Every structure is written in C-alpha cells, then in structure tokens.
Length: 494
Image (cartoon, rainbow, N blue to C red; front, side, top):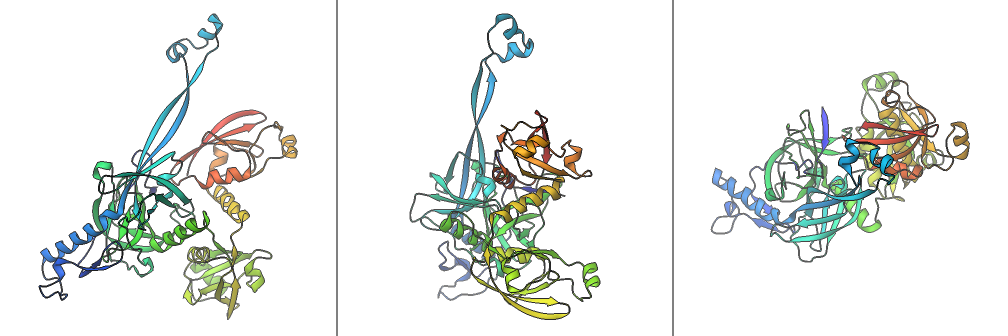
C-alpha cells in the first residue's frame, strides 16, 4: 500500500470528499443557525425531511453556505538552473570548445517558475486561512483565489511539518468564514462533505461526498503527530488543504492524503482533525511556532504477547519503556515498566494517542495519570514541561535509523582526522550504518560526510535536522556525500 500526500506542486494530491445525509438544520459559516427551506413549513416550525427533494435541498443549502469559505491556493516556486552558454556545441563535442579555442565555457543561470495548486479554508473574518504545510512548503509566492474570482496575496503566519498544518493570512476584513467543529464528536459512519480545487483552478469549489470510515488513524507515515480521520471520499490532485465538513456546516477536518496502490483515488483518504488543526493554528498565531507539552518518558504499545508476559489482562494502554533523567515524569515518580491507563480520566488505548494528547497540552499545565504498576493502581499528577530541541532532534535521528539504517553526528576536527576529511568542509558525519539497511545497500558507510540534501548545503546538525523534518513521505531525496575528500550522490525514497 502506498500512502501519498496530496502534492502541492503541479497538481498535488487532493481533497477528501464526503457524503451528507439528511439534515434538518445547518449552520452558516459564522456559526449562526439557519433553517433550510426544505426543513421549514410556512409557519416557520421545523419538520422532518419527507422526500428526496427535501434531502437534495438540504445538501444544496449546506454547500451554498460553506462554499464561499473555501479558497484555491496558488503557489509559485522559482527554480534557478545553471546552463552552458553553448549547450549544443558542448554536447556534441565535449571539451572541444574550451581546448581548441582557449575560451572558457561560460555558464548562465536560467530561471524557471514551478506552479502548485492546493486548497484552503477561511476560519476568521479578518483573513486567517488553514491549509496543509506541504501545499505551501518552499513556495516563493502564495496567492489565494476566492469564490468571487478575486485573488489576494497571502503571507505564511506559520507552518508545522509535524502535523502538516499551515496558517496563511490575507489582508482583508469581513470575509465569509467557517465555524470550527469538534472532531472528537465525529462518529464512524457519519456523512460529511468535502470542498476543494481538484486538478485545476477551473474546477475550484467542487463539492463531493463520503462517509467517515474510521477515526484515530496513526502510523500512516505522513506526519510525526497523526490522528487522521479516514474517509472513503474521492481525493484528487489540488484538493489538499480543503475542507471536510459535518452536517452542521462546521469544519471537522483538513483534507491531506490518500492511500493508494495506483497513485490515484482508491477509496481511502485522510484528513487532519479540526481539534488538532485548531491547536496548531492557535499556537502558530500566538507564538509563531508550535509549543508542545513534554512528559519526558519513552513509550510503546502493548500487544497480546507483551500483555501475557507482563501478567496483565489487557492489551491497551501505553507502556513506559524508559524515563528521561530530571524530566517531568521522573520528578513525579513515573517509572520504567509503568502502564499508562488513563490521562485526565480518559482511557489511553495506544502510545500514539498518549503522545498526541501530551503534545496538545501546554507546558506548565497539570496532567493526571492512572498507572498500572506491578498489578496495583497508582495515580500521579505531573507538571508538564516543554518539548526540548534535543527531543526534536532525537525524533529525526530515530526516523533515519528506523527507516534507512544510519545515524549522524556533528562534524568536528577530531572526526575529520579520524575519517580523513577536509576540515574546511561543513556537514554531518555518519556514525553507524546497519548492514541490512537501505543506507548500506546504497553504499553509505561510517565516516561519510553528508554535505547536501536535495542540492541544498547542510552546514551543521541543526540544519540537517530541519531539512530532514521537511521531507515528505513518499518523496525522494538526494544526499551528496564526501568520503576521503571525494564526493558522490545517494538517493532514497521516504
């Protein structure tokens, strides 16, 4: 199974479409309650839907109310390519021009503009717009087109690759905007609508339908923090960042990706829940970055075998495999081997759920845990810390080691001497390579110096980590590596 994001550049993957069922009342984009013509009699009292025409009119009213809040996101990225001043001559007679005419080959830089297409949702009357990070990542220019055909320049307020959410802002006031719904209340089987711009700007504001197939999908490999709504709705290129809407006309998801063997729609789509998107948006607007809570423990899922070996009857909860020294969890008395059963009274079913819940909390806030320890129940209250930078770096390192089988460390004069590398170079050094992993098969070895990712220089470990975090699942990336002062390239697919 191939999991694909909805690409931003040149018609990336697209919107999740979802189906609506009978509705009696819908909300307008500002959240006000509006009775549809199909559900109100002449006296103004609400009545149930009795016909297919009533049902059709209810859907039409819902689409008309919400459609003006969805925008088409148009991006441009400038690519600069070095080209020879005489490409035909040098291609036919390599070296001849320079050797016999004693004239140096003059390269010139050509500029190309790469266009991308996506969708977005206006969530405030003063111009804040939710979309996907991968829609606007690396864009040099971003414009949004509204349903009336007007186009406005958008600025990036902030972006969070870990959830694939970005916030844009246009200079406007009094815009139609959608109310954010509570995705936690969404039920499997519930009918929903999706709106976006599939395939082309000419197809903007396409409305589609589907049902919610599942909730809480994680380990998909699309983002670091995953809690996707799964739908059977058709997702097409350009819909990425578009709106997933419930029957009250509320935003309950940002359409993001599909699972496919063919690369096209096959009935499995994913949307970021509105609750997660809202938390990320508020943090980006307030802080310019996403501030996440930190417990300071390492956790894993409990399968049937682990449960049997530990002598417990359940295979739910999250097992604490290790505890960071001086971290919030250690200070509160959480120990390795504890099983987290509940968080603030809510049942914990997996390590991914616990990780997402902790990250969503503010540093400095209290969190109460129910733990299972040696068969006994314990209750612990923890003052959460803030996710530190080295924890983020550890996530990157773990991603590389797990996916490709190699680890890196900062470049130093000692390592330059050890591995016979030029001390004037910048980059990160590979410290270990798993012999059975993709990195070893691609000819990476201990002591190799990574100096570029996707033709962008990698000066230090911090820059390397940032570049790796921005890589998208399903994409390819190119490493330029130096070994004993000779360079070569290695490619990988995420």
